[in-house]
Image (cartoon, rainbow, N blue to C red; front, side):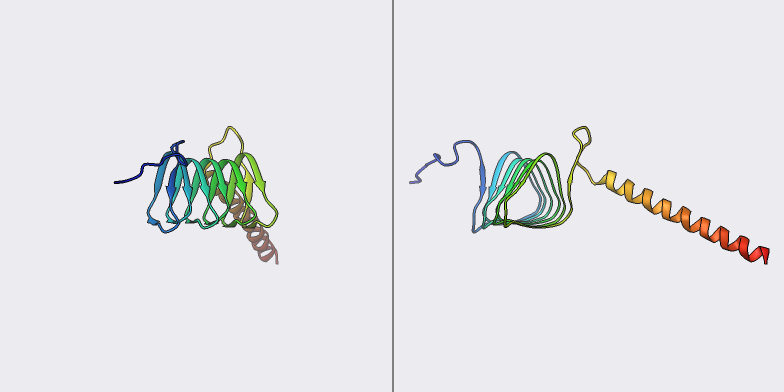
Length: 152
């Protein structure tokens, strides 16, 4: 009744087809190709977003290729951004980043150290450090103003 033709996906790659929309988070130990719409976070060993594919959410993968639309943060070891890709969000990579001419990237791009884990916590502590320094400078200014008032 059903023709089982696995010649295209014999390597174990999962496919989110063009007519499929998924709501929620997705985790996979293998590879995923997305031609449909994904509303949620994805974690996979390998992830490829085709031209018709779209992800609204975060991505974590060892190898990531995008030719479609992404809105969210990307964390990957190796990233390839094709000329048809549109990315709205920050990109964090460990090993390699390739951006083809014509790709539209709107976000922060940062290479993370090999020894560090890819997370946003170090950035938050850096932001907190900058905020603390601003507070200290403000306190110094206020102290100087108080001294000036007391002396007059």
